[in-house]
Amino acid sequence: MARTVYYTATSLDGFIADADGSLDWLRAVPHAEDDDSWEEFIAGVGVLVMGATTYADAIADNELETRPEQWQEWYGDRPTWVFTHRRLPAVAGADIRFAEGDVPAAHREIVAAAGDRDVWLVGGGDLVGQYLDAGLLEEVVLSVVPAILTGGTPVLTRRLTSERLTVREVRQLGQRVRMSFTVNG
Ligand SMILES: NC(=O)c1ccc[n+]([C@@H]2O[C@H](COP(=O)([O-])OP(=O)(O)OC[C@H]3O[C@@H](n4cnc5c(N)ncnc54)[C@H](OP(=O)(O)O)[C@@H]3O)[C@@H](O)[C@H]2O)c1
Image 1 (spheres, rainbow, N blue to C red):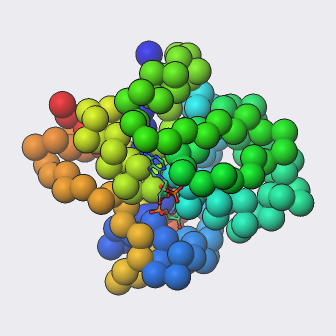
Image 2: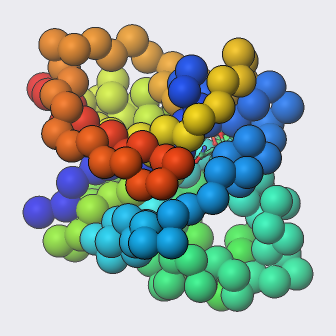
């Protein structure tokens, strides 16, 4: 059964991008040589879901318009739903589907496309908040890196406290700490 999982990297103070929208503070933290958590995670993912800014940033930061094959290398042929009101370019060769408005309506189709694999909510924090509002967020996995940003894009734009979050697993992977939480009810 597919789970809906928000998996993201965050600063110690809970930001997924800094005040300039940059991820340089994240790229500066190396992955441990024996860290295969990404491969393990993506193997269980059937569908990606992201907001317009995350998608546009991924294209711009990685020059995907000129080297779209990079998308395939990362995500294979998994469908990606992008929530947006804009007309954004599709990455050549990738299965990009655009949606807008009501998250639960789109989510039925998303879950069906994921089959028995998970739905990965890539971000950002407000789109994931819409999932939380709709009772559709089941798990949060944070890869915390040693950086304090003091501002930027928050990991989640909703209040979510310990009555609804249960710690499931904590793992140190070199300079990154991976923390998994179950979202209750
Ligand atoms: N640290 C990490 O691992 C990580 C992971 C993911 C993202 N990021 C970064 O975090 C930042 C996230 O940006 P963000 O907070 O702006 O969030 P975002 O979710 O990427 O984009 C927000 C935009 O998505 C569109 N949107 C959201 N919900 C929608 C809905 N229901 N229907 C239609 N459109 C909808 C809206 O854009 P329009 O109305 O303009 O179309 C909205 O302004 C980016 O800088 C990204 O690069 C970091």
